[in-house]
Length: 173
Image 1 (cartoon, rainbow, N blue to C red):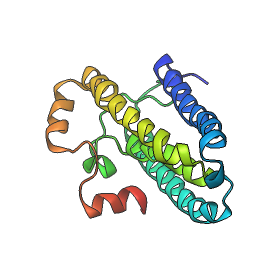
Image 2: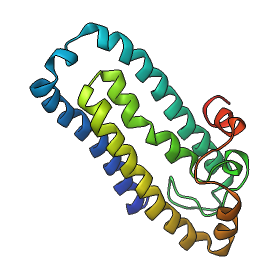
Image 3: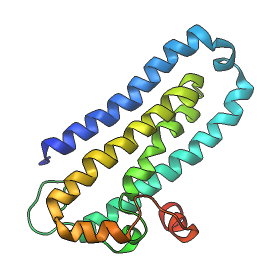
Image 4: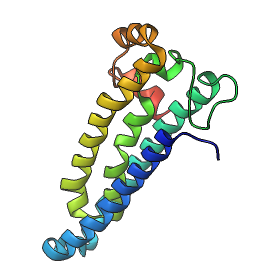
């Protein structure tokens, strides 16, 4: 697969966040929250909630990814890269729909597996880390790639969706 180092690094970070969160949570939960971890009633609640959050997370990522694949690529460029600024479709509502959806991924995994430390401590920290990564790296990269065109887009388009219609497009269309 032909791709850039930046994309490979991001995939590795995602894997570390998810599997590292699971491993750390298992360690903490077996040590400090064993009763909750082994409580079947806790899992009856967390499993379906986690399933729906994962479904929303992957749907949002897919919606953004399809739009980028269709409108953001021109010519022979590495996989998972873009060379055209996309400002229509879901990108009219939010500058980073895929990452917004993927911010939900750690919480979805944590709930699905029913790992208390992951749910209450690790997933929120990972979501914050992803948010900071978007603000610092993604925004800078987009500006470097598209320049003034991106700054104009940034002025009129929020970082994350703000309206009911945008959330509907992101999670249900």
